[in-house]
Each structure stands twice: as structure tokens, then as C-alpha cells.
Length: 153
Image 1 (cartoon, rainbow, N blue to C red):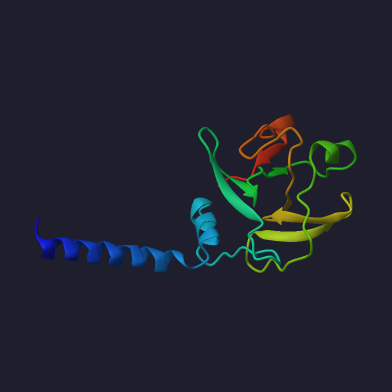
Image 2: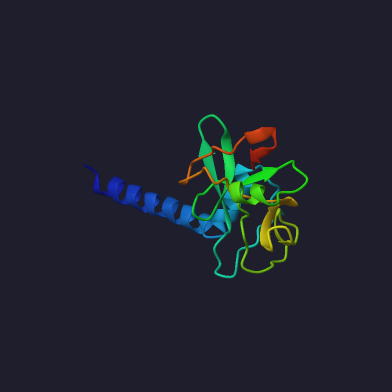
């Protein structure tokens, strides 16, 4: 085995890994969301006070990519005018700790008087969980009543 070739190979591998590390050092969660959801480069997502992105991206073999909370629980939007009373039992709101500036991003927070809480929004639509989704990756709420759907690209 040629020692010079081995050394050059290891140096080349190290340089390539360093380049990937430097390129991935910027806000990688936001970058992954932007690429996965087909967003423009200038669209930003606002992190919550702890610095954790309140949304993430997951994939489903039949349904494709969709939005989740930071722990991987599926998030939904509805075409219904409002979700009140019994609706909020089946579709709990994705509650925010405090208002954040939406800026030019798709993620925002609004006061939902019906749910009596601050609630995350995506592209202006309120985000909800589905009570029948028990673990990350469950997507049982998609298509319910013809008015509930995943947030997809």
C-alpha cells in the first residue's frame, strides 16, 4: 500500500467532511424545512424563546413530507371557519408560550379567543393536533371530515 496515497486520501476525506460541517453549521433545521417544503431561500422560521424550532419536517411513504411539532407530533390545518367546543377536544390547538414576530416566515403566533390561548399558525392558518394521534408519525387526522389535512409541501 502506498503511504503517500493513503495520507492524501485521509486529508481529502478530512477536507470534504470539514466543508460539509461548515456548510451545515448555519440554521440547518430551517434550511431542511425550506428545502423540504419548497420554500424560497429568503423565507425564515422563527424559533421559540428556547431557541428550538417549534416546527419540524417528517415524511410519510404515501403522504410525503408534512409538518410536525418539535417532538414529531403531526400538525394539522382545517378549512373549517372555526374550531370551538367539542371540536377543540378532538383537535387540540398547538399552543405557543408567547407571541413571536412572524416576519416574512410562514410560522406565526396569534391569540385564539375560542381556544383561550396563543396558538401557532402556518401561513396564517391555525395549527392543531388530532386527539387520535398517539405517537410521532401518526397521521390519523389527515382527511377527517374532508376538512382536516396535514401541512404539506
